[in-house]
Image 1 (cartoon, rainbow, N blue to C red):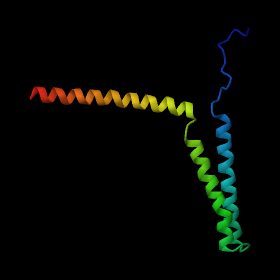
Image 2: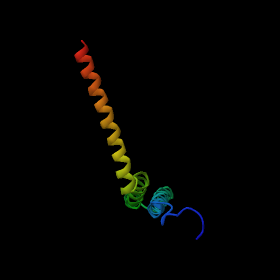
Image 3: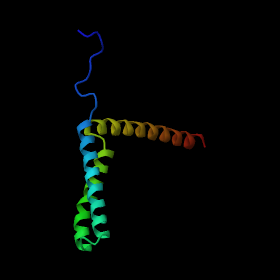
Image 4: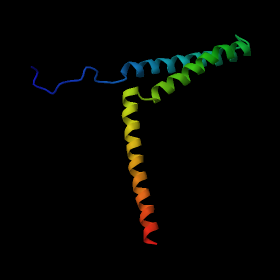
Length: 104
């Protein structure tokens, strides 16, 4: 026994997902930079530069989305809490409206 509190199996949830997102963003930046550089040096035509830059842009956007969206377990927890708060606010608002109607 180590005497400390039990540690979770995965101390960083989504660690592998975040790492993949970072690699995707990095690859997208590299491809986009390579496309612009090759076009500036007239090594490729504009059509070839677009063909090289498009996958880079898709990788970049996909990586940013993957980094911004929480994992499913965290998302369900956060969205449940947000829905619970909204329901609470809605019931307070309805009771406020009922009191105003009955009081007038």
